[in-house]
Image 1 (tube, rainbow, N blue to C red):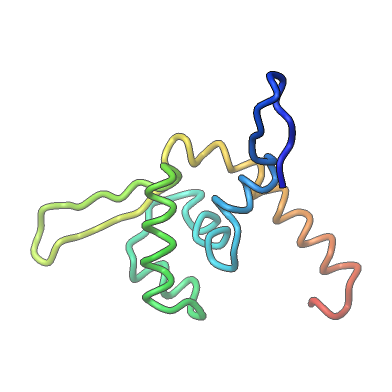
Image 2 (tube, one colour):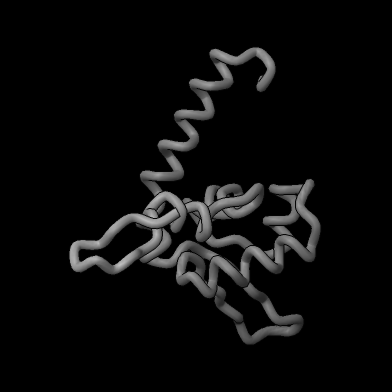
Length: 114
């Protein structure tokens, strides 16, 4: 899906961009769990038990490549790695909060989703 730019150039629809960057089953949950504090990989695994290690690694890498999440490696044995929202990633906080509110409202109106 494309929208016309002013000079006749084509660019992606903004909604398509959002879906591409933060869409999917796990990325919004990962971002949600990183809202308040940094988390280690094992903590994210416990918070999202349905996600496989492979998918969690893949999504964390994608979120890091999109500059939404930062990865910090601490020099220790064994190495300690933490993930947190980047400053740019924090710009998604209002979006994630709106998604949460919408989900709560939807759960209240749709008995099949409780």
